[in-house]
Structures are given as structure tokens and as C-alpha cells.
Amino acid sequence: MLYLIVKWLEQWFSEGPLNPLWGVMNQVQFRALAAAGLSFLLVLVFGRRTIRWLVRMKIGDSGATDAEALRTHTSSKANTPTMGGILIVGAIVASTALLADVSEFYVYLGLIVTVWLAVLGGFDDWLKLTAMQRASGSRQGLYAWEKLIFQLGLGLLVGWFVYHHAGAGDDLRHVLNLPFQKTYMRAGQFNPALVFLTPGIFIAIAMLMLAGMSNAVNITDGMDGLAGGISGIVGIGVFVLALIAGDQAIAQYLYVPYVPGSGELTVLAGATVGACLGFLWWNCSPAQVFMGDTGALALGGVLGYVAIVTRQEIAVLLMSGVFLIEIGSVALQVAYFKATGGRRIFRVAPYHHHLHLGGWPEQQVVVRLWIVSVLLVVVALASIKLR
Picture 1 (cartoon, one colour):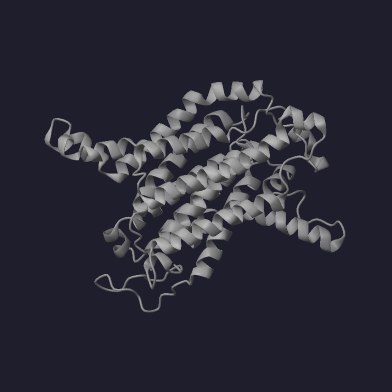
Picture 2: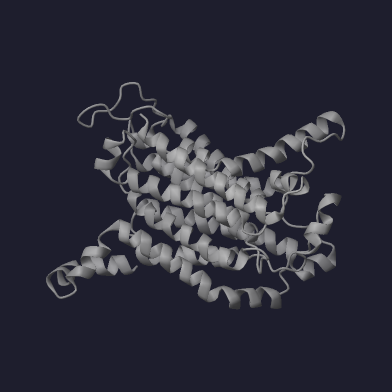
């Protein structure tokens, strides 16, 4: 909103004493960093009163778990307020709406993705965690298939609109961007070896990315600061990818797809990073609040969405290696348990709990997985140059 107002008054700003303000507001890099700072401050300022409201509404974690070995660990977290993702999502939406060009297609679609998944996660949190539901014995949250329908439905819509926004025919916004493959050859000409996706395959990839990333972050959210910290780290990588994809000169220099208009997603990514850092203020050990499905589903959705638009799904999946290990450990555990009649691969899934029960203190697990995520982001960004 603020950016559009300044843009509307462009001539007055550029000719008057406020010309420097127009100069910085016209730079997406500045607005993205400003969004990160604003998002951080919003979470910090509204954190304490939001936590008090959640406590007053009795929206707390019961500390229940199906794994007997984890009961002692989770019982210490009982009644810690959850659904704190409203802080994260509120800061992301407010900062992006204020500082991004909300008339840009990719921006308002990104905001829809964020809000859609936050509402889905919030409804699930509300069913699981309110005192009324616990007392009545009603079912604990949405069924997995119910959430998956809404996630895949969102992915279908995003895939459809993103694909057709680029128009028909071969376009870099439809390309399958493979590691180490040059998108451009010389003078901006396309590499003839490129694979351009059909609408059906593009939409299928979008559905898998959005549903997979949102569920992966949700499963990782099981220790103080774990999901929030890794989301912030991956968000920095996504920030860089959006900056590259939205600048034609840089994209051609690095031989990656140029996606017109995607540079504004840098503001969304910056707001996401700032919100994650602000949330860590309240979520670091011992946590005063948990993000719940409200925040986890939305964070995973934002990361997956930017990957789809910038055509960097593989790079973002590499950055999100910890998330993939976490969701993979659950899938493997369940499949092996059913196939062998009760045997297990891990002490307990997700994998971070396996490490904890193996003797690592919770803070050690969290920090080491942060370090792994930083290294994965560095490797993924380095692979962009190796083409």
C-alpha cells in the first residue's frame, strides 16, 4: 500500500525534497529489507499481548503424544500456548501489503497462499487445542486427508494461474529448471536442450510442492525454535532466488530462468524471514508460545510457492533438506511399522525426536539442525553458479 501511494505520487516525490525517499522506495532490495525489519518488529511488539490472549482463551498444548518415550519430555511443555502462527502470518501479510507492489500478480497470489494455509492450520489448531474440544471428547483436529484436500486444491489453483499467467507456448516460466543446466546460451538465447512443462505436469509439481513443503514444516515443528529457525534460514535462500529471478541481467548472467514480476516476491520472502526471527524471540527454549499448524502450514506454503514461481523447486528442496528428512522419517517409520508388524527404524519419528532420545539435549538438536540448514542453503546457492 505504501509503495503504491509513493508510486502514485512519483512525480511529486521525484521533483521535491523527498526525492531520496522515492529513490529508495523504488528499489525492491530496500523494500524487502524494510519488510524484514518491520515484520520482526511487529512480532516483537505484539508478541506478549498475543501470548496473553492465547492463554486467556486456553489455547494451549496438552503435551499429549502417542510415543511413551516422549511423555516426560512433552509433559514439561503442557499448557504452553500454541496457535502463535497468527503472529507470524499477521506480520508477513501486513509487511508485504505495506511495502510490496500488491498490484503485481505474484504478490497477491502469494498472500492468498499464506492466508489460505494459515486459516486451514488455524482451524485444525482450534479443533485440537481449545478447552471446549478437549472437554467434550470431540475429534482432535482435522483428519489428514481433509487437510491434504485443501492443500492439493490450493496447489492446483496456484499451478493453473501461475502457468497461464505466462501465456501459451515455450516460456521460461514453464521450464523444468534442472541443476547445472544452462537456461541461456549467448545473447539471451534459450538453451535448445531445455524441457518445457505441459500444463498438467506443471500443476502436478505445484500441488506436490505446496502440500509437501507445508506438511514438512508442520512435522518439523516439534522442538523450541526448530521449525521457526530453519524456516528463517531457508527463507534467506528463497529471498536470494527471488532477487535473481526478478532481475533479467542477473538471471542471464547466472544462466537461470528470468521470471518478470517475481522480484516483488523478495518483499514477501523478506517479511517471512523477519517474522521467523521475531517469533524465535518468543519461541526459543524454553518456549513461551508455539506456532502450531497456523504458522507451520503457512511458512511451508510460502517457501514452496516462491520456488514454483522462480522455477527453483530443486534448489529450494535442497535448502529444505532438514524438512525433507523429517517428513521422510515419518513416512518410512509408518510404512516399516505396518510392513513388519510393529518394528521400527527410528526410536521415534520425526527424526529430531530420534536424536533427542539418543542422548542429544533439545537445544543441541535444534542448533545442529540449524547449522545443517545453513550449509544446505550455501550449497544450493552455490549450485546456481555452477552451470
